[in-house]
Image 1 (spheres, rainbow, N blue to C red):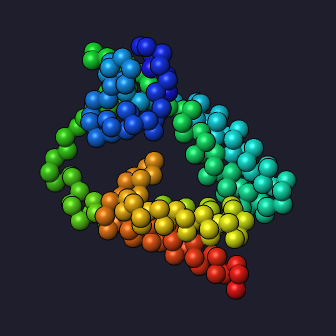
Image 2: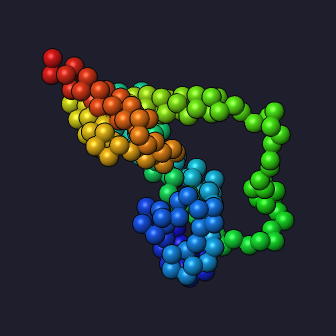
Image 3: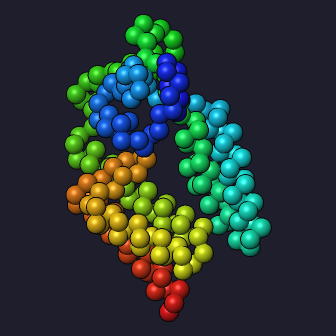
Length: 196
């Protein structure tokens, strides 16, 4: 992402930007002007289609099955298209457009806000669903022995760090250990199944 004020390239995973992860107002590390990350749909769609079709075509050319190539092309297209579609914009306080209306915070009445147990259940189901999708994508997209090794390495790193940080959610403590343990178990099962 390039800052529109000072034209310095701001990397999403740089320590300066990640240090502002929890703060509501983020600033450019170079010029310290308040900025916001904006998702652009058209570049995302263009990058998703081009990269997804390219990855699926390469996998089909190397003899992968059509369902595996399609699944891996969709997953890799989404991951590749995410970063080019993000843009950094300077925050202006007197915005009156559609974006300002959509980004306006709304306080829901107490009876409409979900119960704490429902939020916990939603987070657990979201983590479980992402674990299943990750195992399926890697299991079908990467050739058999290497898919197991990749999942086992990812699981081992998660258990060792006691933290799982993906682009769509972050887990700490027991949740991270359960998630990383699931990856490790799936990797070991795939490796044993291949060599058995």
